[in-house]
Length: 398
Image 1 (spheres, rainbow, N blue to C red):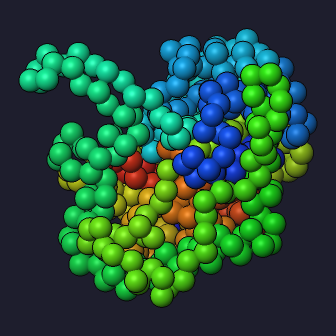
Image 2 (image 1 turned 90 degrees about the vertical axis):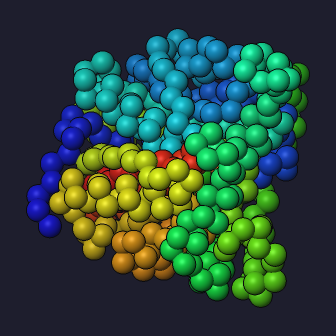
């Protein structure tokens, strides 16, 4: 391995200033009934309070979301108001890559000297997603209604196919064995429940109360609702929806949020409860593969990232990804020659669900926390998005 300098030398992620909600599945919790932007802003304030980070330290806010909600037009300023601050900020949206992209945008703000501390807040609510009516002058019906979550996941403008179809297409290209895809899925569930048993999830996830308009409790979000234990036998009994894709070997839509801070080195030491821990963002890449081959895009992004940095897979202490289909992991293993058993040791989105923007942010938070528990090292985070996009980043924990 050759020495690698970070592309953001003046940027750090303060350890222990992050957190996420649990991710209840679609329509399984009171999160289905709230304004998710308002709730996320209030929740970020609560999480910072629990982490003993004064909200006054924040100078800028990067918000990431993909599903429209009431008042989304106001984006970061509205969310900051719900947190009890008046902050400038911006909104980031890149489908399922949004969480990691938002972290990189915040890093750019700090590196450029725009601010010393930037907050990253990512969230989405797939439950009761908005339905829009659009004048479409090129269509014979003239007016088109679209359900934001379901219609977009069911239609890729590049191919006309669904995201599920992209998994089937990639599975056929790489001649995947359905037996191995089922085995990956069962193993990922075992990893998640082991992380839950050891209390690892409680180090990053915060139980949150949901209140109604009158301030009365509607419920408490304290678990990844909708996650159910699976067995190899139950997975193998499921009907294929496309090649190597069943209801059990893909993720599910969910609701949730994840937040962290990005700062200068001096501010990271000031804000972190363990200032001796140093976390750097080394590098990040994005690629597009051929249309409709989304599950192979993350592997190609990681290939490019390793070429750029001079690092190798063997240098990685933690490897964690957004895997909406178990096929993603099998393809990654084939392309990179990497054992999929070594990935996602503390859980992944295949199991705990997929609130779009928050997905890769939670993945990153868990990956960094895992690296700290292992004594530091390089952390590889990657995932797919929007039909044929791959994104990958490597962090260094010292």
